[in-house]
Length: 235
Image 1 (cartoon, rainbow, N blue to C red):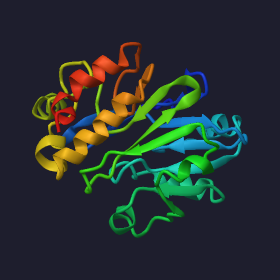
Image 2: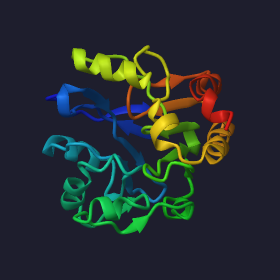
Image 3: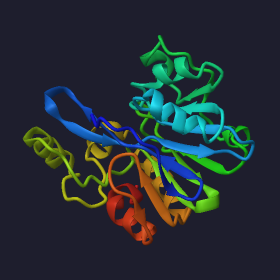
Image 4: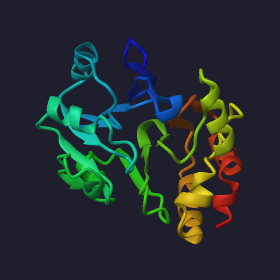
């Protein structure tokens, strides 16, 4: 894990920081949590990672932390730590996480109604058809920025041979926007629903893609998504 956790501006209104998550077997993922300041001045933190006191101070300098978001049933490892650091923040999670992590405090289930609670600037969509993951994506309207976690990857660096093997097996090792084969062969239970969801995401016509895993894409987001998610778009 990176020793320096530093909040950086990504696009107007959105900040992020990066850390390295080491999985069993030595597989290394770069993970990026996201921070947005809502119209009421409160801070929205999506997919929280490890948070040092120095990083917490940087986040709190933007405003009071009022919303902590787990975007799917995989991105929850540090959610408990964040909720203990900011006990007054509402904890949002996808359906199913309460069974997977009964130890977590969860205050609200993600749904389209969350948009109003977040001031109307963040549109959210469920990627239907993959109930074991229940991934939500977020479209920040002011900057036309699409935030995704595991829907697509844009991995640019990794430091172990095991990571190279696993990313090759997943189909995300070409250092360009790609989708894990797990969607097709493991996660996807209803391919028609996946197709509808993918087409709805592309139709947002984002100008910036902010992936949790990998490099940011500015411009040509729609064709890149169409290429990376071709099989899913076909339904």
